[in-house]
Picture (cartoon, rainbow, N blue to C red):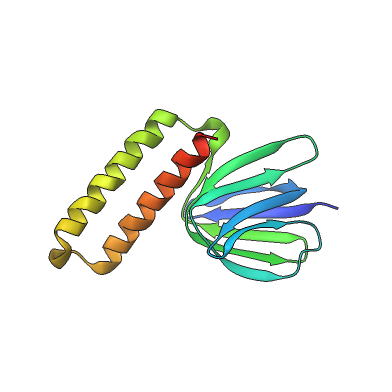
Length: 137
């Protein structure tokens, strides 16, 4: 039996397909979803989303969001999804540096910065770091 996975970003449906299992990074740790998993709704954290089929395994970097398992359907809503099979390591490095600089500037000007904006920048840095870690594996 297969699972149906749908990943939705602000761009629309970025991935839809059938898989044998999915490893999802959550705020309580990584969970692996197999067919007939119990229903859950969980908070997604930046990290690696691992899709497995009998013949292959694909790794995606996901940003923060939410995941829902209902029956054999997994729905993920996230700010960003990146297929690590096609990732540009140098671009990830540059994006990480930009995010870290923006966060440092925000921390230095905390009184002039909206706290939600600082939190958004911190999340962006966590996502960039997750992509770098996934690339190194």
